[in-house]
Length: 78
Image (tube, rainbow, N blue to C red; front, side):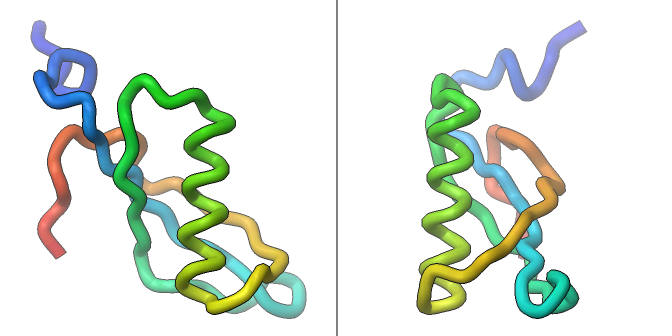
């Protein structure tokens, strides 16, 4: 059986997530995504996600995130 994530020919992937921030993390961003290489380490992906959150919020803000789709080989239509 073919694995659509592992067997995709393109190493560029899209990870989708939602970030939570604010007092007790009660505020939520829209669904965000980062484009990264499938060979990136978990630490590198974490840095990409943190950078994207900072970019969207406009400043370094305490936050956490929930990954909705990890390393999807194709962009999800919005």
